[in-house]
Image (cartoon, rainbow, N blue to C red; front, side):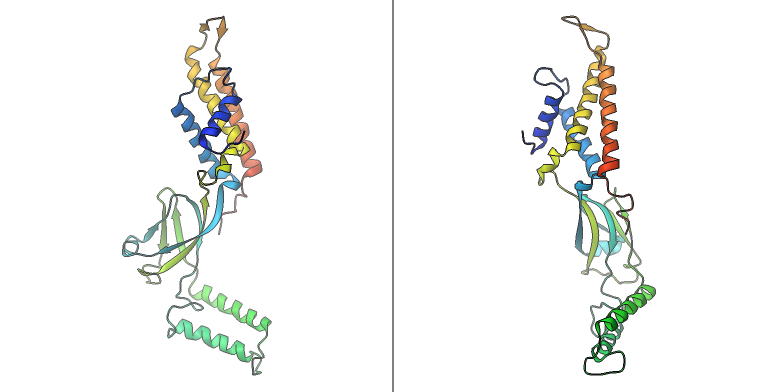
Length: 257
């Protein structure tokens, strides 16, 4: 049976635990909580849970006053901010020193840096000059320095607001990794980790709920061992987490810019 929603996932897990032949003593609210817990771990570590993207944002007056911008909670990591327009190579003002300096470089390229003329500049010369310009830009201007606070959904731009490199009305671009919305891409609910881990979470909750009947003999001579069920669920959770971290997680330095 296809799993395309939270409800499908919950029903699959309950069937895996024995329903409808057994009554799974877990409240609907607890079932929803277990799916949320599984999704949180999945989005934190699974390779398929995030995607690389570029976040464009226009600065407003309050951002300049605060010294930071607020970003959507779906963004998990901010790798870097791309250089703004005020650099040796890029400029918004064609009469600025940066723009004129860069144009003189391209003019030399067009006529050849080896002293020739008539457009004798080679691609290798362009590449060397471009590398040199990038080195100058990095040495004199550096790269934008940012700090990302994930729990606050804020990106602090150090120096750019103070130096007026970024002003109200300007656009900035961040390289980010954001979570994939499971409601939009429902194949997440059918992921093997999601099925195994959610089942283990529900099993642990079931055992915890039934532990109050520990040692009580039910009609028919059946004795419930809720503690054992809880321990089995915890062991299955640990096994699923181990597989996630060892087989399905990105390398630990993947998000370092």
